[in-house]
Image (cartoon, rainbow, N blue to C red):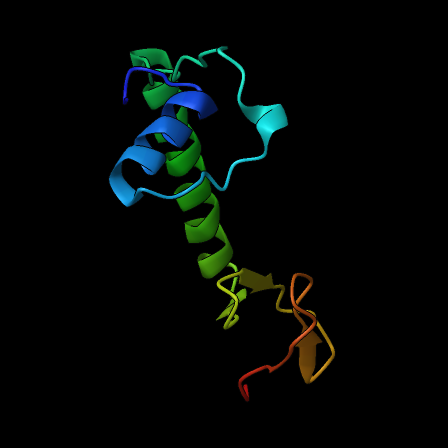
Length: 102
């Protein structure tokens, strides 16, 4: 099934293994197969370039004394050195994060 499969193929496999009715709605059970997109060399190169650019940006911010905070939700916040507050709210989960003492 890793070469592309329809919901019907998955539904049939599920029913054969579990000997129960499918959990997929009948409207989704068409014979249309969806091909999986293969990552090409161009996509990998672009991703590597984006990662390198992000790393260079982080190094420059670190040199310019930005404060890096990682929220519990996984978001990495980059606080500029001229930020006046004592805490900042995470834009993703709204959790309040305290800045370290200077």
